[in-house]
Image (cartoon, rainbow, N blue to C red; front, side, top):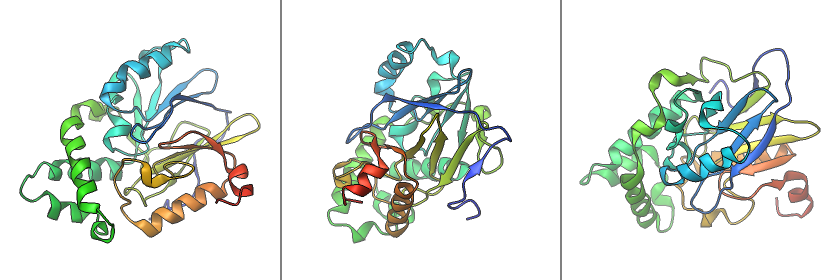
Length: 255
């Protein structure tokens, strides 16, 4: 994959972006982040539909409305990261087309009552290597059938695919495909600090097994993705946990 572990940066200038957590991640809900450079505002991941009110309130507390958001960036298209894209109908949406198409196909096949387990192996070929994988996938399938709504992803005309179009200037990304193909992790340069918005390439600082999410698409690649994110240093915003300092994590001997 051409972009794998290359830092991809847009534009010649390098504005400083401020990263604020709008909704902190937890064992079920995904982290949502606001990026601002003084004149532009970007939301990274938009959570699930039942959290739309909380997301709108978090923006309002910062003096913003959904119409003030210039762009949305989706790390990937699992349901807990994208279902409030529809709040931002006037915004551009940056994402990987590979992740978009892969996740849409997955959720379509999970609706096949008779064949979903067999079909799921196309997306998660290592599923049977995991203890209790069948039960876990069954639980996650129920969540998907309850919440998945492709209409909440935004209009197709809003999408700018990173495979062919650059992110807003000064933002960088990594392709971290261990969780799902085409998954993005963002590198944000702020005043005196580096912030990594990991998405689900790094679920939480500790105890990732407690997060209710899909198993990795590829376990070895996921482990590599996590290690390389930590190696970047700086402030880490996991997909399903509270932020932490990568340097403190390493000094603790737990990394």
